Length: 348
Image 1 (cartoon, rainbow, N blue to C red):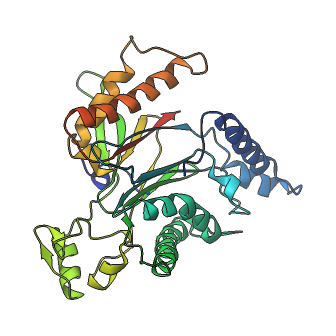
Image 2 (cartoon, one colour):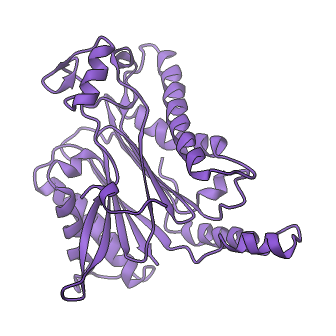
Image 3 (cartoon, rainbow, N blue to C red):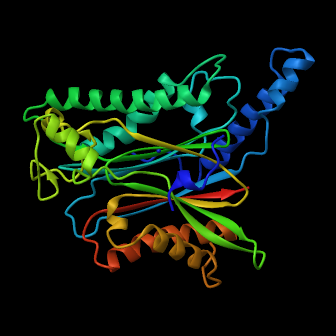
C-alpha cells in the first residue's frame, strides 16, 4: 500500500543499549524545559509551549547485519533515539528529535561509512533554528540540502585520493520531529511501516504495510529520462551498464551521467496504531516483499519461545529477536548480498 493513499496530511554505529536510558533522560529533560518555559514567559506563551509537550511515543532501534556471501561488509547504519544531543539549538516548537538510517555501499564501504558518520551532523547544522512559521517546509528543505552537502563533501574527499575513490552508497534515513516522521531516501534501500487498522465488520485490527520510500532504479521512466537527458545510457537495467541505482551518495564517475543525490521525502504522523518501522538495504527485499517482512516480524513478536536476557524487557527481547531472525532468514533464503535491517519499535 502506498503511503499517500492512506495517511492524512497534517528518511560507525551511533547509539546503543547502554546509552539509550541516558539519551531518553535527556529527551525528557528537553521536553520538560519546553513545557515549563525556561525564561519565565507569560501565561499565553507558556500555554502555547505546552501545546507541543506531549507524551511522545517511545522509539527504540534494533539492528542486525549479515555479510552474506560478500568478502566484506559495505553497509552502515545509525541509531539515534535522541538526535537532539547533536543540535546546538533548534526551533522552540520542537521537543523531540530521533534519527535512524541505513546505508548500502557499493564499490567499497567508504561512502556508506562517510554518510553514517557525517550526514546527521550536517543535518544538525542545517536544521531550522529559532522561531519558524512553516516547519514542515523547512525540514524538507533541510533534508534535501543535507543530502546534497554530504554528497559534495564525500566527492571532494574521494577526488583528492590517489587513486580516486569510486565508492557510492544508497541512503534511507528516518527523521522524527515530535510525532512527525520524515523518510528521505536515495537508491534501492527501503523503509516500511506496520500500522494496525480496525475492520468495521468484525471490530478487529488487521496489519497494514505502508511504503515510506521510493526505489530509484534506472529502469524507471523518470529516472531513465533524466539519465539520457544528461548524456548517459541505461543498459541491462544499469547506468552505463554498470550502476544499479540512479540516485546515490558518491559515485563521482556517474554524476555527469544524471546520477543525483536529491532524495525523495515522505512524511507521516505517528499514531497509536503504529507498531514498528523496518529500514533495510535491498539485500532484504531481494528475498522478502515488504508485506512478507512485516508478517515475519509480527510472527516473532508473538512467539512465546523467545528467550529474554536479564537486561531486556520481554518486549525488547522480542523485537531484538525479530530483527536478528529477519536478517538471518534473508541469508538463508539465498540472498548473497550484505543484509542490514534496522527495526524501530513504537511504544505509544
